Length: 373
Image (cartoon, rainbow, N blue to C red; front, side, top):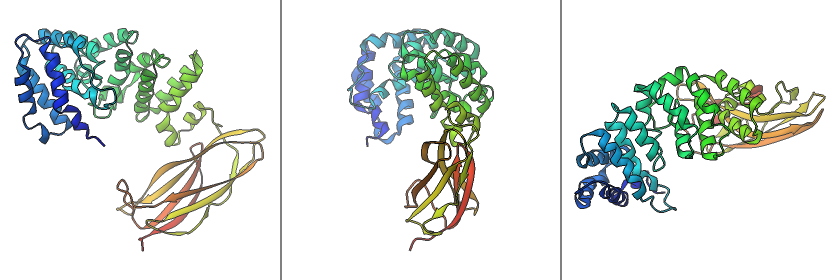
């Protein structure tokens, strides 16, 4: 697998140099490339971004509004790289972040530049310092951008304001009070672009981690008012994925699952109550509907893993989504591997397996995980 930092290696540097040569008088591509390549192999991805920002700055005018316009002027000359290169967009990353580094005291010119250049590399990281320092002005611009003809600009409204954007600065004001963003998202959840709708779903999923009731209420309103129920339901499904995993009952109802299932569950049959690390646990159980109508159910199971501190911590796994008819019986079985993997460390001791139906716990069964032989 290609290392992400290689997205900012010599080919990307040459593309940056070419673009700058088109807008900067007396620009020396050779000098720029030479400076950019100094110790580049020893630097990780974020370090390369910062290094290239520093190099770019040595060639740019000190007057930021003038520099911002020059960066905008790059756009017609930009080489987007090879289509099959998943890292080709990284070349524009230091150009975008240059604006956040040197333009924070110039919000008008900076947001104009970020809006124009976000198509080269999403400005979702670079715009966040401006949201923190110039909240009101940014919001005014976002209210205009949600109607922009460019999907990259519309997506930037949603992605840039995400409270917990991975790799990005956390926006504490929206973690504490996400309400300013809801009207913006409400103008984007039915966007014709899947690129935008996916960002809206991810944004709501961020909010759900701190303000689940806001997400539930928002999704309920969208369901009531949507003229595109198929795409709206897709957004809601992806927006509530963390709520579903945590067993939020209202989230299951949003997705059309039975609010209060009428179910009887047999005991959980385990293939072995002593399972060695590296081996597999087989289990099965029987569901019996006691309802007089069909029920829509999400069946999950949780393993309560023993941790190093001798306390258990549950992790939920998907099992099956089913439709259970009135008085129907159904047997479900599953295998769970305790194969040693790098992302999880197993500790011997008592574990629990738990069956969850539409987020509600129905049955638990203990077993012992032992050291591998």
